[in-house]
Length: 333
Image (cartoon, rainbow, N blue to C red):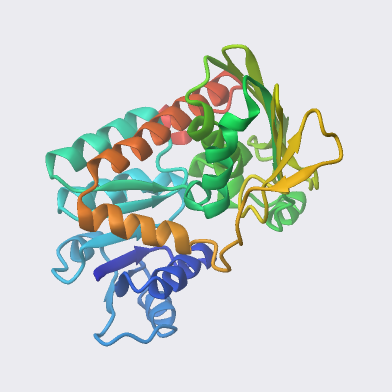
């Protein structure tokens, strides 16, 4: 059982704690917030055999001997400094995506993790889902890959605030926000996991009043094919996600939280074969189980695979942003 702390008290942190406890691999032992009442309110939702410690400084969390690992889900721009302090204190760190604002920051964090012989893992939950694994395992059935189309476009309630003149963190370049790094990283990470790092990438963003991107079309170029990605937080899309090959097509309702994976034979046009399994009801459960296993077993090989994906994704998004003039505040300092 791993004792862990959390930074961030929003819905994604609550989802991770619920999934972590359901896995029977983790126990919440600490909550960090600058505001003690916020931390106490969050901690009060969970019953544990030992008391949950409340921390209002990163130094006290880092020095808490009861905490082995920390899950960080704060605003994007804060990830680097928070993770750095905890890694230097020899705490394993799970960073909610995007792990860092820049590739330089990510390189430094992985360097610190290796120096201290601990794990740094970016929380791309969808890569650990049973149906994403089924999709990946079924790729050889397609023969030569001809292309893919991934869609992740969901209207964000926080865009309403933008339309009313506000600048929520997730749509602020000061906080390293924008649709590309908040939501586009999911299909990009899926493509990297399935096909490797692209040879080139292009982004055609929908710009919004905050100066950030609200969504747009991403194209990842590979040897002999391309992946088209429709990612947005300012409009919805119900389009399916697909991978195309010479022998058939693999189709999913979405590229995250995949409910089913179907193989469509190219020569038997009306034939569909289900190649996936039943979706897990807690969408962070599979990652919670896997992260605990990697840490407890010291599985450096798997950690290295995940590190490679994280490094490739941040290089892609960094290049796309800079080509479109999407520069974060941390890059100007």
